Amino acid sequence: MNKPEKKSSSNKSATESESTFKDLDLTDEMMKALDRAGYEIPSPVQAGVIPPALEGLDVMGQAQTGTGKTAAFTIPILEQLAPRDEISTVQALVLVPTRELAVQVRNEFEKLAYFMDFKTAAIYGGHSIKKQIEELKRGVQVVVGTPGRVLDHIRRKTLDLRETWCVTLDEADRMLDIGFRPDIEKILSSVSRKDRQTLLLSATVPPAIERLAKRYMHEPTILDFSKDAVSGDSIEQFYFSVDKVKKFELLERLINREKPAQAIIFCRTKRGTDKLAKRLKDLFDHVGCIHGDMNQPARDRVMKKFRDERLKILVATDVVGRGIDVTSISHIINFDTPEDCDDYVHRIGRTGRMGKEGVAYTFVSEDDGELLTRIEIRINQLLEQVYMEGMELKREVKQEVKPERLAAVAAMRGRGPKKHRRRL
Ligand code: AMP
Image 1 (cartoon, rainbow, N blue to C red):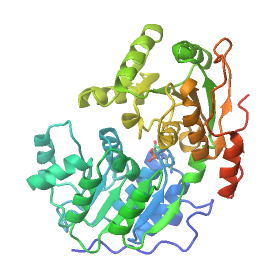
Image 2 (image 1 turned 180 degrees about the vertical axis):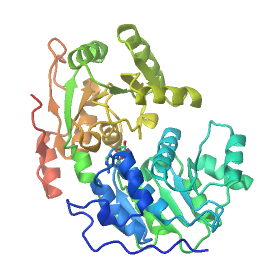
Image 3 (image 1 turned 120 degrees about the vertical axis):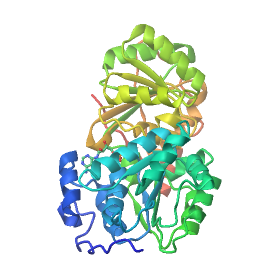
Image 4 (image 1 turned 60 degrees about the horizontal axis):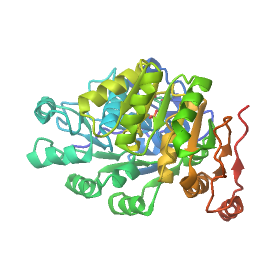
């Protein structure tokens, strides 16, 4: 059974700034759902990805969350689904790295399928597999899941992928980071349709992603939306150099000074996250904490409270922090400098979403100089140092690689280093 024929999309360049959803030649049901969602114009990633995806082509898009990338694949998938009486089994499978993201992506499908007769299930570990099996039995067109749990269902034969014509890998780089590669490969090779469409979204494209794309995609259209997001034009980025022992005091003063609408404070370890949240709760109201050791219902509760803005400060580790989609986040505070510079890009991507302004502060201690330099090279931009009285390090943070080196690296890449505009 083939997916329904799509009219080919208009000839207009997808990236033209005046592109509208109307130019994308979408169904009335989709137009009404977009209107209901309050989406007026396509974001650049949507304008870029939707037309080739609607043509049934494989697309590899470099984009991070906050750019509207979820709808960029949700829209073409929904638009190409065959009616339930033509194909009763799962037609599209979306793989995501975390449970939180599975729920978020499922919600986006439900939002945009509001006027359509399609069902989406989110399947992930930590939740009753029995309930998921019952939901799958009732019939769903789209499954959004984490690789481990999806594979579990494939093995139990409770997930039928024989008619699946689209597989999407969302945040592919993170899925590889957390060791999902063997699971992903097994899943991809168990989707049997030869005319499968594969969509891949990734904030970064390391060689492992390229290899995956080469092996499992057919002449993908490659689109890169990462530049703006990485340089974070709507995000002000600063760092404090601070003594390790004074980090908490600096944080307290910073929160009091900035009075963030909503902030995420990133820590390196789960224990550190717990400890910091406890200390902050003594000083501030509406503080929450989320990390991978918490059970799923507890994580869901925290995320719901944060989305509903009943929490103002969320202390988080990278794995769960990634993919959090809350548009009112005004501040990102890296209480611990991220060890992986891609994590930095993802952390700051939690703010400045969909064109809103955001600010990111990174605390850099004695031994973090090299990490800071690596981040600056990664984003091709020098973070601006800011100060809080009495908080400075006795000696400057030693940056292993001097700014001149950064300039050289930037020149090699053919663009000058960008100094961030001053905030005040
Ligand atoms: P994402 O990058 O998919 O995590 O999306 C970030 C946020 O932007 C989500 O809250 C979406 O609901 C919202 N969004 C996505 N596309 C649009 C659009 N075209 N116009 C306005 N908001 C959007």
